[in-house]
Amino acid sequence: MQRLRIHAISGGRIGTGTLMVLAERLLTALVVVTALLAMLAIMGFNLTTSSPASASAHRHRLRRAEDARKSFWRNLRARR
Image (tube, rainbow, N blue to C red):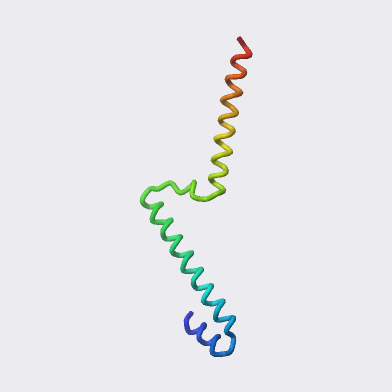
């Protein structure tokens, strides 16, 4: 990877070399984050709430459960 970057820079394509450096850093960060999440999962941590989509779905389920509970008590009072 480093040889390709040096070759691109020496060929007068500095922008290509810069993009390669950026891509290399992003890939490294992605590998590190993936490794950390894998280690946490192996240690037994629940990772399902780590993504915003999962947290949103969880809040939606809680809201539906609360609505169902209110509806249950409302119907029970109406039958008296």
